[in-house]
Image (tube, rainbow, N blue to C red):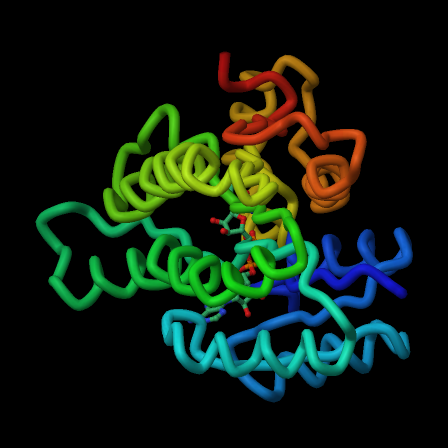
Length: 241
Ligand code: NAD
C-alpha cells in the first residue's frame, strides 16, 4: 500500500515542489490550494495518476475531517500532513486593520491547527503519523514591517514544539522547516539591486530553491528521522544562527 501525504498550498512555490518530491518518493499525494482553477492547473502540470487535489477551507475542522475521512477510505491511510499554505506580509504597523491581521493569522496558524486536529483521529487509529509545518527564518528574527507574518511564524514554532510533546505518545511526530529566502515567484520578481545585498548575508551565497525545502520535508517525513520530533529545522543557507 502506498503511503499518503497531504500538502496544503501545493499549487505553486515550495508546496508544488514538495508535491513533486513526495510523488518521486512513491507517495500518494493530495494537494490543497485556495481555488479550483489553481488546483486544476497544478494537477494538469503534474500529470501524475498518484496526485489529486482539493480546495476546501483549511480553517474548517469539520470539513477537513470529512476530507481526511474520504482520503483514508479511498487510499487507506493519512501518513504525512504538510501544513505549508501561507501568506507573507509587509504592511506597516499603523496601516493594519483587524481584518488584515486576522487573514494572515488564519491561514498561517489557524489552518495548521485545524488541519492537524482534523488529522489526529486518523493518525492515532493507524498507530502514528507525521505532521510538518512551514515556519520561516522570520520566526527567529522578526522583520521590519508586516508584523502579523513573523507573529504567525513564531506561533507555528510554538505550535510545533507543544504538539510534538503532546502527540509523541501516539507515535505522531511534529516538526517544522524554517526556510530562508526561497526562490518562488515572489522572490523571482524582486529587482537585482534588492536581492544582491541579501545574498551577501547568506553564508552559502545563494537564495534557497523550493527543492531545498522539499528535500527537508522528505527527510523529516522519512524513517531516517523517526527519533526527531519538536524540531524547527532551518533551511536557509546558514543565514539564521
Ligand atoms: P506561494 O505564494 O508561492 O504559495 C502559497 C501557497 O499557499 C499556494 O499554493 C496557495 O494556493 C496557497 N494559499 C494561499 N492563500 C491561501 C488560502 N487562503 N487558502 C488556502 N491556500 C492558500 O508561497 P511559498 O513561497 O511557496 O510559501 C509556502 C510557505 O513557505 C508559506 O508558509 C511561507 O510562509 C513559507 N516561507 C516562504 C519563504 C520564501 O522565501 N518563499 C520563506 C520562508 C517561509
